[in-house]
Length: 260
Image (cartoon, rainbow, N blue to C red):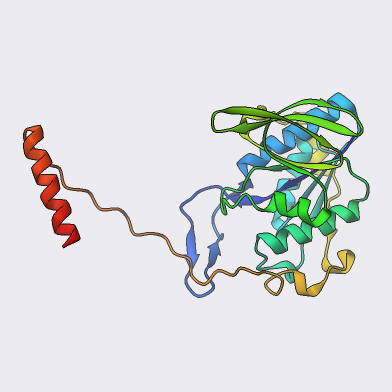
């Protein structure tokens, strides 16, 4: 089974600064990590390879330093890493990002399964995975919590719902987005770390992918960030004291004053 796992490198902390001129995150001095949900995607890809054989390819789109995320995934058991990196891809929204990643996956060649984390911690849109399946015209199953069965033509999974789960059978190739309930990511072994250190990372630029220039980067992004800011720190509220009937009356008066 040839598996592709799409990951993203994100800031480790939520306390990031924002450039007021470009409305982008200022990542200088902030440690980057693999998006937490993508760790479960990597682990599930490796587990499926261990069950059914095949290969796990890790793909990420980002700056040159995203190389570190690919090496960490290789240390966990993936076979190869591909970095989609070009200034032409800068400013991509979720649509342009999914279009670009789909182009990179086509470059890899034949695949049976694509796995993504359910969403990224910095954007929280949960749109890139489904977007990739749309561009590749393959089925998708989101919020997967368990892979029950798989053959070379079919996969049966459990999809998490708010109250319980549903069992879905999908033909392959397909795309899954996974939740943290699906597994527990492993700690890389010393052998894995050594292999990752020596691994050759493939760089894919616009020249190699030859994508439509009108569908990548800012030009290919239907949505653009007009302004981004940190919300003001919440001020402490008023504490109402007294017996319950008195507190209720005070609360009513406060609400009336806010309306008026």
